[in-house]
Image (tube, rainbow, N blue to C red; front, side, top):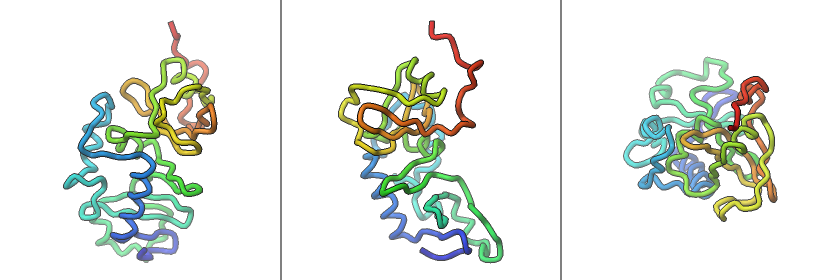
Amino acid sequence: MINMTTNLNQLNKKDIQNFFEIINKQYDINLNIERKNISTLKFSKQFIKDNTLLNYKYFSIFSNNKDKYYVTNKEVENIDLRRLNLVNVGLYIGEMMKNYFRPSIEFAQIIAPYVNKNIIELNKKEAIDFLNGFDIFKEDFNGKIEEQNFIIIIYENDVLGIARKNEDRLLNFLSKGRRLQTSDVPDLE
């Protein structure tokens, strides 16, 4: 890593490859197969260049001392960031937590159309419970979900958030600011 400031490090080509190996192992990303039902597909394609997600030729990836990762366009490299006291730069894409990558909702929206494991679609009742901040209990995960891994949660065409699988439940990682208020809950009928 190249130290850009006291708080931010720019990932070099090898670090980026290692970073994406972890993400690919966790989510089995295939850029050649798209889930047509994910509404963020057009947005996602802006981050894919030369059939590579966040290609280092076009994007720079930074991390801070708390293992949080950010992506920005390549032009940021032309700015002398050493003179600035930055906490972060660019779009927050997630963080490493105990050998697992926990993607931000925004990054989950980018990769969801290409993810083949550790993604689950909820029914309407489960989606409402999830958006209210409750954990989701399920008996069958269809074999695509790994224990203790971060799971992308979708409902119909939308990415709702991130959860972590623990035995028969999905631990809700939706921040309080993104949760529905009681008055916002739609009628299930």
